Length: 160
Ligand SMILES: Nc1ncnc2c1ncn2[C@@H]1O[C@H](COP(=O)(O)OP(=O)(O)OP(=O)(O)O)[C@@H](O)[C@H]1O
Ligand SMILES: Nc1nc2c(c(=O)[nH]1)N=C(CO)CN2
Image (cartoon, rainbow, N blue to C red; front, side, top):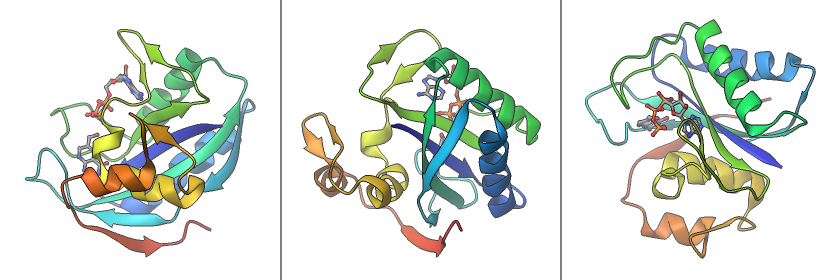
């Protein structure tokens, strides 16, 4: 299974998340298998920005990791994402969190996503889909959450 993290904190946030999933689902080589709930989350890292909506989806795909990254970046552009500040506001952000059990470390793609184990806004929706089946850095999702700095992640809406 492949897991993608979605985030938005500009404009019609929910609409951007739903549109991103529709665009990905319409791709001939991508099947969307499961969607977490949508959560409202306080900004993490660069905190002087609006609250995010975040979700995680599970997909299957024949695309290579590099091809999938290209599709994610194209989907972001299609939804009006302009790249400005690192960790700054964005209409939509699509991260490849996990690609089966592959470890990828190239200039343009690092999987597992290098910060996911620190981010409650990723771990909580991921846990919706996988329970404690995923182990990163030797810890389950629940154990990782217990090590994270507390930050607000509240249920916003179910995805369906
Ligand atoms: N696992 C990954 N998923 C998506 N992009 C990645 C990944 N690993 C590396 N990248 C690279 O990161 C680049 C910049 O991504 P982006 O601007 O969305 O970062 P960010 O969302 O601000 O930060 P973060 O990656 O910490 O969430 C992408 O163009 C891509 O080449
Ligand atoms: N709550 C939250 N905070 C963030 C997010 C995000 O998606 N949600 N994305 C970031 C950069 O990728 C930086 N900070």
